[in-house]
Image (cartoon, one colour):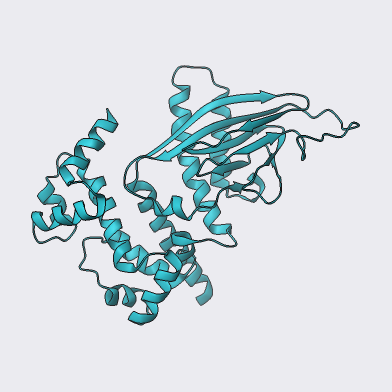
Length: 306
């Protein structure tokens, strides 16, 4: 019973951190193509400055590339994500360049292809922690993921007005769920995602993300993790890749950008919500971390929304 409770608490803390991080960044997730292949085929996807993903809607295909140790086979409902947009090859055969002469003609294959990127903030700890590619197989995923993927597939066949908008919103949600699926099953997570698999670090991270304006110190974070100050600082830095106080600073700056998008909040109000005793201290902190002042950040984010 105790082990089950620990596992449940870890899931809650992990999901809480994932939700706050993914929700704090403005994401662009778009379906860019609905393609169909027949016979023996291959399609080279070039490297891009944004992430790419493919959701199989019909048939099967193989995916290979320099970032992949071995080709991966996808079937209907499977999703493959390339967070950094590395070059890869889609094909009907495991070896796209050497199809066997006696191979049975494959069935038609269809897929939704898309792009994703975060467009606010100086860095995204989840994107930084994701591998060059990851796959979510429908058969191994949660009911929620499969249902959402099915909705996206069905929407792709609907030719009514508004289909693109609905597809993009569903794809945004599917990517979020895909990250959660990856974290739950990753054998060798890294960075923030590795920290979320540790019950102690996950508990401390959840508290910091929930209450970023609190007067956090390494000692108070360590208390959340039920660890000594030194042990916590060493484990956090080694696992996440940045010291606890530096991570806290970047998270506060990220939250500040999110709050600044709301014109109802003055800069002074945002400073107060994040625990700064004066607006001037907050302005100095924000410019040190983000490289620009809060007013300039607010203007840029407003221009991006237009």
